[in-house]
Length: 397
Image (cartoon, rainbow, N blue to C red; front, side):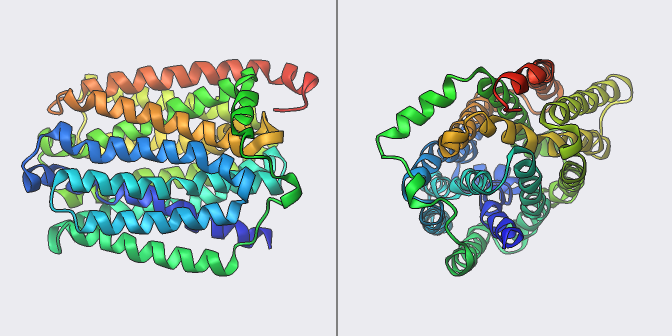
């Protein structure tokens, strides 16, 4: 039964990333469609990410109070309504509003999945199962941009959101039929304990440490995804569908990293897995900088080097998430909410502030990625050094 739950959770988690990335290839064309600036159309992405974080801030704690299943189902229903709003939008503002509603619903998936897996498994096994969930979830990032590029070109951008409506209805039906409740009534806290759960998580230094790791790593990935459609058009002159084709390389690499996590994370332990993976991201970024300084990056070498970064993120991401939630076993829903909110809030702020950066050169993006992932690497190094002491005093990784 537990393996069935893992795959059910993967179906729910798939919706949010699919919605975020399936329309990336058509971002530049939406500027002319609605007659708005890049900064305005970028709000459909940055506010989507921010709304996802706000949703995740509350969905985990609500699931502590009301159970995992009802919160998940309500979230998917809201996602479907938001997708309808996007498909019927007649202006950029209407599209932004629809994206916010869509994100508020889609944001429940990952945070509830983490809480469900935490209900069922100890930290290392939870990280392994979460890696399986994310590996299946990669169907969205792997096929989303490619599908969106062709749909936008051949059928029109509205068809992208109608496809998401159909996907949401299918996932809602599947979960309503097969997903059990994993959080028993006798373990549910009072509604007022939401603040107490947050305070408990924030009082633990190692929760902060792992949250910094997940936040910076995720923000770097989102930043790349927000800039690359414009970079491909402005610097390389590539059509929208080309982005989807090249992105498969990164998504496939992320899946390889996730697969490696399912095989080796348990033996390495959380802190060593995170340290090794974060070192891999710096290796990939160093390769990008070296190629640009010597022969200059082209789309194929750009995505090949970024594949090293995303493979490393796929390897250590589940362990970093699991490490953060494991610090607060008494209130794992609240801890999962805080981790998710910090990831989305920082990513949204970074993306929108970067909207004014030029995209006819890659150096602003490379500089930002090195700084963000450098912070991640430093935090991972500290986490690895302090893991033995933490295990000795608290029993948490």
